[in-house]
Every structure is written in structure tokens, then in C-alpha cells.
Image (cartoon, rainbow, N blue to C red; front, side, top):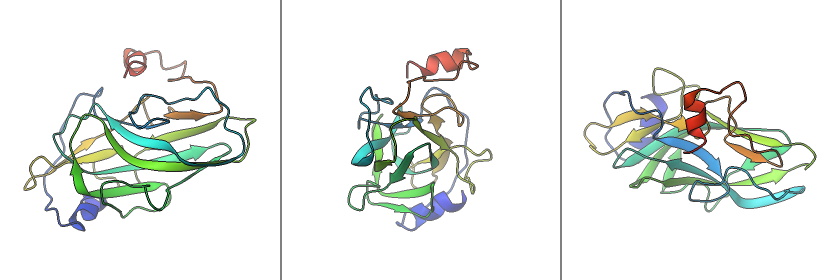
Amino acid sequence: MKQLVFAITLITIAVGGTAFAQDPYRDNIGMYYDIEGTVMCNDETLEQGLYESALHLVMTDVTSNVVAGWEARIIAEGPITLFLPATDGLLHSAINVGSGEEYIVGLGEPQIGSTILLANFSIYVSGADEPGLIYIDGVFQHSLPNRVPAYVDGTDPENMIEKPLHQSTGGASDPVLYVNGECVPVGVEQSTFGGVKSLFR
């Protein structure tokens, strides 16, 4: 439970418990152009410049009744840089004990719902001639046995359980958002049933 639990402890939530298996097509995390978590590529070209609070980190198809925290590494590649706005970046009275690309976040206001907006990101585009890609992975000091994004199910404050989050487009090697590039939800080599199903999440 490591740092994710530490983040939650900082906001006075008692923590304990273990992880268990779950449906890989639920509990998704992705970066989107809309706060509902439905648009992961944009037909409009983003020219060079800063776009404030233009991208949104969203959990979708959430199986927990209460989300008390989350952890993920958010990686930007190509001519783009991500920034957390000072005022409306991390949401829900969040405390982040991660650094750089890694976010290990406890929520002071645990969230309920099947779609949860976790954070708003600003993006600086340094050039529009090549695509920018955003990936999501687990953090180095990951809470679960495998390095995957995760969240804390806070349904029972006495016995919180950490659950894996699944990247909205397949896995850590699949971009979850495209900037100025062709929208290809999963790689050609990933023509598995899971890869095809991820197109319809």
C-alpha cells in the first residue's frame, strides 16, 4: 500500500486491506478532451501555444461505491508538455505525494459515481508538425504487486482495498490521448478480443 496509503493517511482516512481480482473492462483511467471521458482525439490542430485546463484525467466504469485515492504515471511524448493548473488541477481536496510524472493522490473528498473527473491538465504544444501522445502507467513505488495504475476503494473506511485501473485504450504501451495525430485506439498488432473491445469502452 506504500505511498498511496500514505497520501490518504495525510487526510485522516484510516487504511488497511488487500487487493483482489476484477473485471479488466471496468475501472478504466484515461486522458480526454472532455470531462465526461469520451473524446481521446481531436480533429482540430492545436497550434503552438498553451491550452489551459484543456485535458482531463477521468476514471470511467468505476466499480467501487467510493473512490478515496488513486495513483498513476502520466507520460507525454512528442512536442507536448503537461502542466497541472494551480487552481483546478487535482480535484476533490487532493493531496499528491508523488513527483514529476508520478501521481500518488489521496482524496480529502472521496468520490462516488461511475465516471469521476480526477484532474484537469493544461498542455503546451511546441509544434504541430508531429503528433503528441499521452500514456498512463503505474508508478515506481506501486501499491499493487504488479506495476499498474490503481485506486483505493474506500467503501469500508476500516478496511480499504486497492484495485487496479485499466488504461482506457488497452495497456501501458497504448496512447490514451492523441494531440495532432491520427486517432488509432490500439496498435495494429493488438488485434485481440480485448483490444477490439477497448474501442467500445
